[in-house]
Length: 139
Image 1 (tube, rainbow, N blue to C red):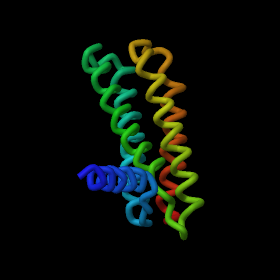
Image 2: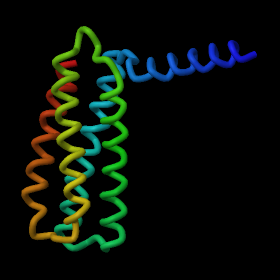
Image 3: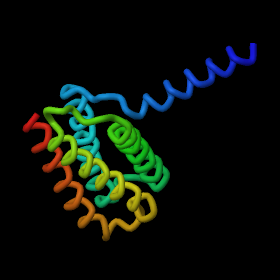
């Protein structure tokens, strides 16, 4: 009985460690980068809305939290996967932009109420979005 339990535990540990090494297909990579690009576009639209004074503080805080969680999920999935063998440069470029967007959104969480400071963030995020578009189009 003890040996069976040990074997089951070892098998589960092996399966758990393999989940971080899951190969990513080219289509999956493209889908994740399109989702990240969409989040960057949504973030820019949202920041414009905030800069115009059209968002309440609770909405602004909640929405920036949602955007941060979503890009964090995509980043985690990309970090835990192996890049497609035939698209490693696009994977690296896309991953760096996803990480940049996650960092930008994380910083915005603490200063979303300072509308006069958001123009620079919009420019940064537009650049990230453009680079993500290039990565997607090269797939």
